[in-house]
Length: 235
Image (cartoon, rainbow, N blue to C red; front, side, top):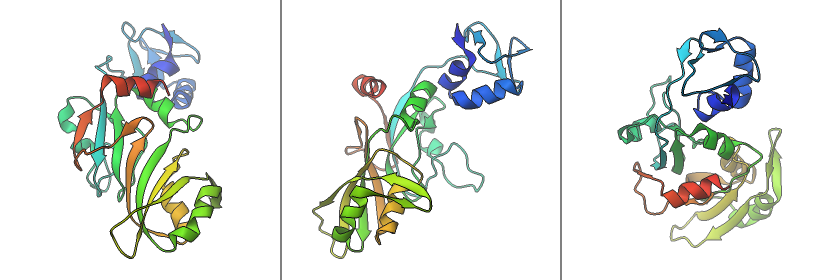
């Protein structure tokens, strides 16, 4: 027996806070009876429904690492008809969800899974999982380094300082930065760079926690190894 909030979160249906709101609003039922906050249930025996839609039985947990290309949105569907990351992993045989996001013009490592509990842990602000990006910029990169490392407030949002290094680059007229952050707020790296007078021309995530993109081709995916899954769950 488990609390309903935990069951709904683990299945990737709702976050725990959202589940509490749904339960209080009478939108969750157990065996046809409106649930109560704090109620426990057995997901293998009880019929749990949200807004009248029965919670599917637990499927095999799947963990994928996708090299997201530019031009794809990190959602399962898009009202504007844009291409989605779900299309890239449709052949994995399971419905998986992106853990966090990369914006339309960003690329690189994107973890996708149907493990709702792990998703909640990795995306919760208190965990601050490290994410490393390779960022191609123009502008005075050397002058921007101190501010990027110190942190800043942009449009009322406070960003912690990043670990930043200037990498050797063959491309003249621009600089290649390694930027590592822990917060992972919306478009954080782009906004921090813009605040320092840098223009971002390419942004690619190459690491998240213990996971590395490696030489995986753009648009391709692979299953995580058992060791990688264990290291993620140990964060």
